Amino acid sequence: MELTLTKTYETKTGAPVTDSLTRLLNLGFFQFLLDREFKRSERYGGPFTLALIDVDAFSFYNQRHGTVEGDVKLRQIADIILENIRESDMAARFSGDVLAVLLVQANITAAVGSIERIRTAVETIANGHLTISAGLASFPENASDGSTLIQKAQKALLQAKIKGKNRVCAIDNPSATPSKVTERILVVDDDPRNVKLIEALLLPMNYEVIKAFSGLEALSMVNKVEMDLVLLDIMMPVMSGYEVCRRLKSIEDTRLIPVVMVTALDSIEDKVKAIEAGADDFLSKPVNKVELLARTQSLVRLKKLNSRMVGMENILFSLANAVEAKDTYTQGHVDRVASLAMAVGDKMKLSEGELEALKYGGALHDIGKIWVSGEILNKPGALNPSEWKEMQGHAEAGYKICMPLKKNLGPALDVIRHHHEKLDGSGYPDGLKREQIPMVIRIMTVVDIYDALITDRPYRKSLGKEKTFDILHQEVNEGKLDMSVVACLIELVK
Image (tube, rainbow, N blue to C red):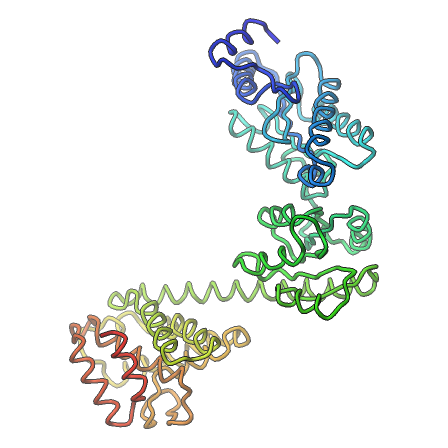
């Protein structure tokens, strides 16, 4: 290291250029040297490579052996790095247990060889109890500035973690990524022997096995990579499998991932606790190979099916938004109807399932209008008989559009079809009468009429609340609307 650079940095910052624990360069000075290397390489040519090295499951190692022993190991790993790089190369403590190495005048191939030697040396000195993963990116092949180079190296490091840790991955290296998309299974256990056993059973079935050795590490990995199944040990320090499962099932992005509890616990109380946490299945230790593969295949198929259903739901809600875009007078109609219908249902003490039907039925009740021409939707005057027939067809059209999601939508599907039915049989499309019309549909009908009357339409202005209330009461007197629903709605909106 040039002495003048060191003294200049120390004078300006008032801090040493090295980290006190690892004796590697600190991050600030390392970034200064990285910027200088970019300028030098741009002027004189020649590649250089950045390697980010992370100690695998280091937080778990500290929990088990103590932070003092963890610091000792981190110092040893830093010494190994210094012993295996050239004098012209630079090593730094990048952050926490992540170390960085800048290999000057080294392309990605040469750098992989150097870092691989470091990885092997760490594995040997720690007897396999502590390992490192590394991600590499090179200038000018992968990046033309410092921030991009760091991002690419971080991406390669993540790939090394995903592929099972204790390995070196170079960005954009075809060998670092799987040749085809496979199902990813996260195996979580604080005992590495159990993880290796399950991995050995799953790999011949072409599953991509991702390993985690603590609950916190499992949650972190799920947030970074899409998983198809989680095989989760219950008895783990710091965070139990129950808590991991509970968190996964409480988050929208991860709630559909099947979770199998793999445990030696076998009491009814333990299983009830797992079910309450949201577990999808159980496996007893020691794991039976046939049972493991059968459960895995079944739940992975279920995850794929649920993912397709969610995709279809997203498409339907996009279509519903497209309907509103066609009708300039109904912007926000479906949101208002869904919200108000749920408020009425809640006040009338409907069940959770019925409230959900109002939520999704309200959001999708007009989706069939996608088949109605914009000229009819925005016509400023009364519709003629043929136009009115086309408009009425939206209820049945919406029902047919949403039919593939019958299992997911449940009663909401009936709300979509029947939200224009009247108690006296004068509604459409099926002319249902009184006892044939469930309460969720009665509520949706009233709320839909209320919102239509209270807002501007192409053929008239808003009628205002009092006039709207009068019309609703008139429809009650004529036996068309449910009196209890109308009374509840008026009480709410007043």
